Image 1 (tube, rainbow, N blue to C red):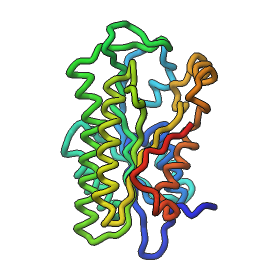
Image 2: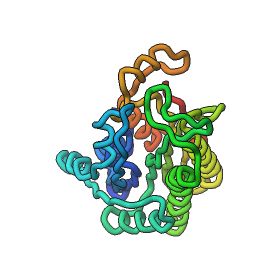
Image 3: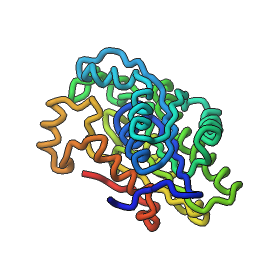
Length: 275
């Protein structure tokens, strides 16, 4: 087994994983816990309106709590707590760290997975190429996306760094999730822009926090079947010159766990693209 983080005497790793009620976040929480990490699973239930281009199961996943994830972790002897929290509130990061420290111990692993995902565009049209509903960029779509995907990760990183320095810690890991590309993210423009901001914050953290023993990286997953992938999406991946796989959440979680391990001590300041 690869040398993922393990709990040893005097070295109890604790992680905060955002968006941990389904998909990549849930898989990451389970994978980290399987390596002995204590996990705070934070999430926010989202009630998406019905959309003919989005499977109903995906809407159900986004609107469930993280109780099943915690139960899965505890069933194999792991330790986890679930906290529903709104990352658009700038007070939330400090509260999450307070809860994690009180119930699990000092946090040294941060996985910024949550997204305030909205499907918006500059070109007004009702649906994207997969039949999913589109909205035109406005203050609401921008605020929903940037508060969760840019502001919250920045504040969570700052909270980790402050507490890490205050207690004289020398080991830490930050992993974020990104998407989009050099030409932005057409039809998901605020999502792509907010993820670009998070990537920039994380790259800065890799430099500024290196002296504290903290590494910081971003993972750019391939198309990942978290419940939204339809047959049309699979065909688009098959026909694409840039996409190779439709991944499972567990496959992406494996990479995140590697980055949170001692084996990845020299890996920092990277956007790691998976295909």
